[in-house]
Image 1 (spheres, rainbow, N blue to C red):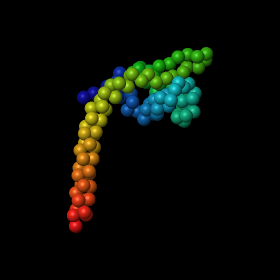
Image 2 (tube, rainbow, N blue to C red):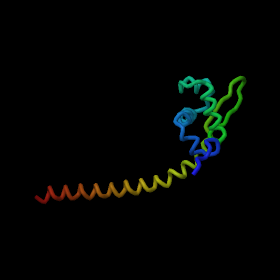
Image 3 (cartoon, rainbow, N blue to C red):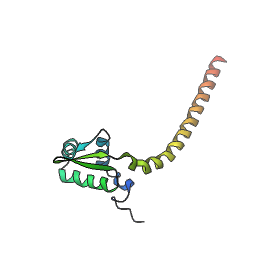
Image 4 (cartoon, rainbow, N blue to C red):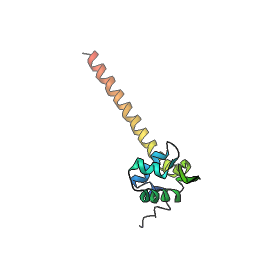
Length: 117
């Protein structure tokens, strides 16, 4: 099966570690390309390329302020990822709850074994 283009799919767009790094930075607020370049320590053309992909899938938006372009995270675009992960979160929580119950039972048995001697 052919892989979807990174510019049409949020999952593929965030598969690249540098793009996730950019999203992490933008989660703290609006930033210019130069700010991102300095923080990521990546050449400006590469940062711009990653920002273009993130814009095309709707994960970031941009506004012009004078000569600068300021980028910000567009959180609602992350919903497909959130929804997908939420399914697994329920499973993990159920398993962790079951493990917690088992550990509590084992602790009770251990405590009863000590006091019953």
